[in-house]
Image (cartoon, rainbow, N blue to C red):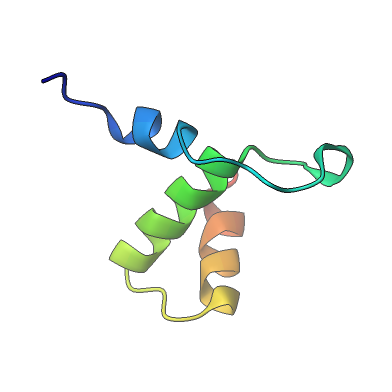
Length: 56
């Protein structure tokens, strides 16, 4: 059985958003959310703050 990387797993999740309104790929959003929560983010506002700080 082949082991999948986290990126492969996240890319395998279907993105049902409208393509004309998408700025970031879904797998990137899910990854940053996961990392933010692991670093202690407890709300969407804190996840957003974390993502903005790590954007560069």
